[in-house]
Every structure is written in C-alpha cells, then in structure tokens.
Image (cartoon, rainbow, N blue to C red):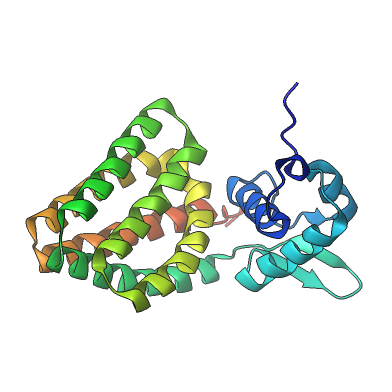
Length: 224
C-alpha cells in the first residue's frame, strides 16, 4: 500500500503542510468554523505538531484560519461582506491585468492561457470540481503573468487564493459559465483589444460576484 502521508515525502514540511491544509480548506474538507486540533492534524498528515503549528500561523496570516486565545484555531468563516470587498478589489486589479495582457500579448502567454482553457473545459465536462477551481485560479494567474507587471503579480497570488475559496463554493454552478467567460476574455487578449479585454475581465468578476451572493444569501423565514 502506498504511503501518502506528508511525513513520508521527505519535503520541506511547513510548506507542504501549509499547502495541504490550504487545499483542504479550499475544497471544503475542512469546513468553515471547524476547530483545528494540532494533534489530530499532525497524525492525519504523518508529521509532528511543529510544522502544523507553523502552518496554522501562515494560514492565519492569509485569513484562512482564525486563532482565538484560550479557544484555539478554527477555519475562518467567509462572510458575504468580505466577499464583496474581495470582488471590489478583483474588478480593479483583474481589469488592469487583462488590459496589460492584451497590450503585451506574446506567443508564450497565449499558449499558456489556451492550455489552461482546454484543461478547464475537460474538467468542467467531467465534473471534476476541485480541479475546475484550481484551473480557474491558474487561468487568472496566467493573465497576471501575461500582463508582465511584477507589482501586479505580487498582488494577484494571495488575492486569487482567497478568490478560489469563494469559487469552490459555487464551482458546480459557475464552472461552465466561467469557462466560457474565460474563453471570451482570452479572445480579447489574443486580439490585442485592451478596452474589450478589460471590460470582459470586469464583467467576468461581476458575474462571479452575483453567483457568490446568490449562494450565500440566507433564505427568508416563511412568515416574512
């Protein structure tokens, strides 16, 4: 039987544990509000408590985990208000990234974007939702890379990690639409149309925002 524990992989444990815990949070395997017990996580991952403790600190700084004195660590809850704030920033940042990508379009970036699109189409059609969420993030990161702006690239990765948490909650509904919107955005970037690329990027984020707010809207009581 193959050993899939992280301790058996002989890698840099803090980074590996952090990546795995982040993945589990994004995938919903660790639910929002769930208490995180270091001993249990260490045993499940095949590592000591130390890298788990360090990873919790990293993910707390990223906003995925909340640490409360005398209570401990829990998976953070992503409110509709926080989602709105993130979408406001995404519309500005990703609109700019798309504009710059269209301005500086090159063969290498075009190939990379197209590869991600093709992989996403296959994942959507096969219903592999976790992979769809990963590829959604990969596409947006590739647009950021195509923009060729180092300051923008620094901003996009942490922003898109948070965005993936939102997308993971709506992937079943958003997946097919997101792929089509990405394709439309790629076409504008490939054509070098800066205005259209920016407009399509902003429209795409706006559609994602509507989907998230619909998913998080609390149903009204029957007597309202």
